[in-house]
Length: 208
Ligand code: NYM
Image 1 (cartoon, rainbow, N blue to C red):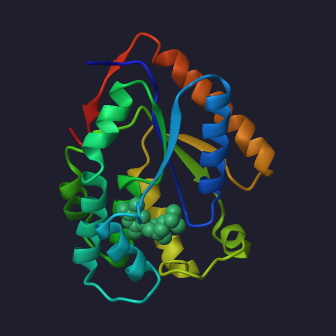
Image 2 (tube, rainbow, N blue to C red):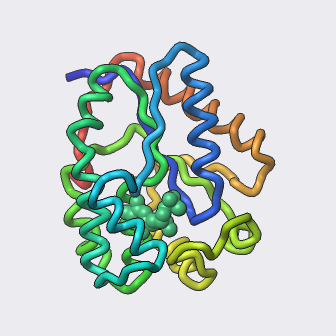
């Protein structure tokens, strides 16, 4: 089945500005007459998502592998809806997806390949955009430290893991720039991606 719309993930350290940029991108695409939706992972609205949320808020404790599998289950429970949306022509702008799973869980010392395994078969995006921010800049942003993982040393390990996961197809945007400049660059990247998807692209699975 041909796919004529691009879909992309935004990844990055905590407080890199992904969520605001995803919102802006969706409004922009809608303004261009494109059907577009913002998705976020973890999706805290499902029952799995509620368990994840309470772990992130430090109101529950879970074994490292258990929480990793819950993040993965959270992606799996949305996979078929994701496929339906993409096949119906909706562009999805996804605020984090499975790369976060590997980057954050392996920062606790879990094996990379073990972390990747449960994500095999999830849909692969047309594009991954990494919002690159320094650890110090991220830590200065409002709300930092409110959730588990928002600690400098932990984020340093996450940043190293993103470097390992990174491949040549990823686009990197400097998230230390002014918000409007980041937005402008993201628009250009998305428009480029729309052009390259114009002849239709098949959906593919991750890590295959
Ligand atoms: N996170 C997110 C993971 O550890 N694994 C995952 O698979 C995903 C999708 O959740 N610190 C972490 C990264 C963040 C936290 O994300 C919540 P956000 O974007 O702050 O809502």
